[in-house]
Amino acid sequence: MAKMLATEIRVGSLIEWDKRLWKVLKCYHVHVGGRGGAFMQVEMKDIERGTKVNQRFITDEKIDKAFVESVEMDYLYHDGNNYVFMDNQTFEQHYLSEEFLEGQTGYLLENMTISVIFHNERPVGVQLPQAVILTVVETDPNIKGSTISSSFKPAVLETGLQIMIPPFVEKGEKVKVNTDNGEYMERA
Image 1 (cartoon, rainbow, N blue to C red):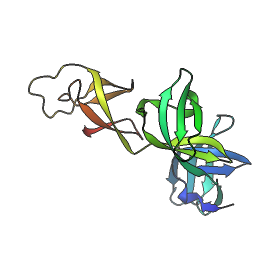
Image 2 (cartoon, helix red, strand yellow; image 1 turned 60 degrees about the vertical axis):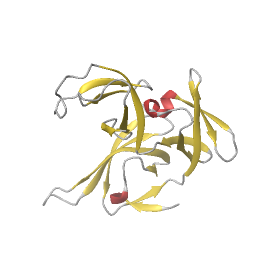
Image 3 (tube, rainbow, N blue to C red; image 1 turned 135 degrees about the vertical axis):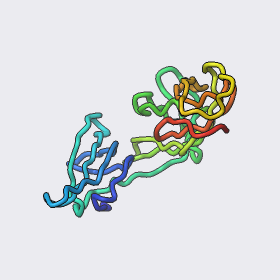
């Protein structure tokens, strides 16, 4: 079993702790000056049960890193209850539920290649590209003279994802969206 220091834990990491597999949702390095040692405050989710836990790890504590395999797959289509992915090497199809994808469905376009993460030959998560390019299908009309503004307006993208965009972006334009936080990055 591979080990890592608690300070190496990152959001999205898969760790084995308390005889279970956990996905890290949030992590913070905390140092309270003069009041004891530093520690990592980690919010993580149990892959099997779906329960969340907040745990403190001392910074020099060794944590078991889960052995995972990343497999490149193409997203094919949505069949009502499941999202269908095809392994690029074996052409085997995998059906993943919307609950399993945890809000990442708004970034999926047909024929898009993503990485599906497996642990003990079972899918435990997906890794999307850093950014995706999507078309704006619904938004308020452009306000004349608003080329640069600090205010944003709501928009619906082709996948149904709702984000805030600058006022100069119009319906039909393509925008680049950050898949980590769902924020508008730029026009594409």
